Image 1 (cartoon, rainbow, N blue to C red):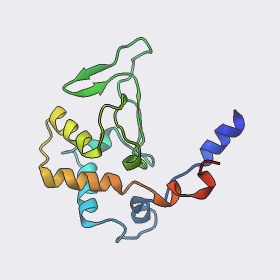
Image 2 (cartoon, rainbow, N blue to C red):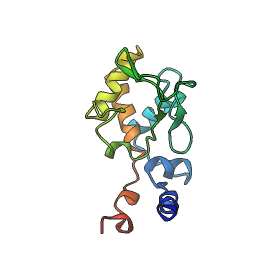
Image 3 (cartoon, one colour):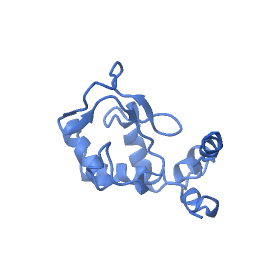
Image 4 (cartoon, helix red, strand yellow):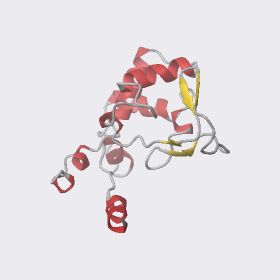
Length: 150
């Protein structure tokens, strides 16, 4: 168990286009659309970064004070309850989405949040946000032969 835990801690994905921009200074790492999406992601208007924070774009339990016996609620189409906000690292490769796997695509996730949170995002905003989320995928990491199935 300790060996597995040590191995998992060593799995650090940090060469996505976003990482190349932020940590490597490569201003050409993101497309124009992804740049727009990044600004939107970190804006108050979209509010994505209120929950998805830090290096892993993850978060602590969204609703503090809930226990294991607290039921999960669905309010306006968005699940609420006692669970941690998942990482968005390599999110384009982790479908289906949401805690219950009920959403098939990133575009559908964005649409769900636009409706549920009453966000004012037009089709271009939504496409830019999706492009930014795709920029969090580290293709080098996910294709590394060292981590392939034996």
